[in-house]
Length: 251
Image 1 (cartoon, rainbow, N blue to C red):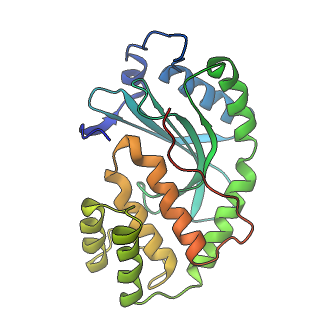
Image 2: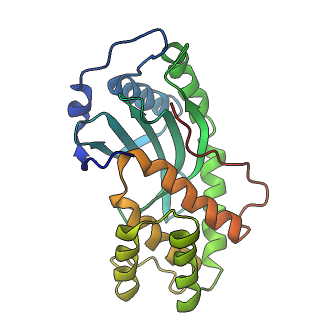
């Protein structure tokens, strides 16, 4: 995986990146098209956009986008949609539906990783707009499931020893968290940046961990969020009827 520095970029900066030439085996999907398809698809199903965030590698060959919407009646979480794309064939095109936590602007959780993932080949340029619209139609189901998972996490007490075990498993055994994230989590353990209104629970720990993911490389952003969410769902039986989440795949 590239070690290039990543940083926040604007919509226009992504649209200004030169799109690679199409070949018989490679069909690039322009960032600007993805931005338009996502916004139009969200508007068609009545979503109100309240925040956007774009991040990219230094050369902007890999980019991720997150869109936060006013949605639902839960007072702690709103709906989020994210995508990942590349111009260097490093990652395939992926979409994810999840939620953002109101109290923490950087906090996001994605419980639907892998349902929409396409290689840059074949008819991807033609089918992407309609597939995005169809995918967004599942937003209600995904969001309601994540609210249910959140409520379950708030009911599970977690002490200091258990917090260390969970973080240790994600770091040592699952290799999901890196040293950067562990350092942030350790600092948050001593004094959390935000009050999640659920002290000493699995929900508080989940938020601290997802907060630490703000520094994750754009190429790993969705996959890392997905693996963290999958770990919590699987380990604590938050959703017995969940479908399998697919992770990385070479484009």
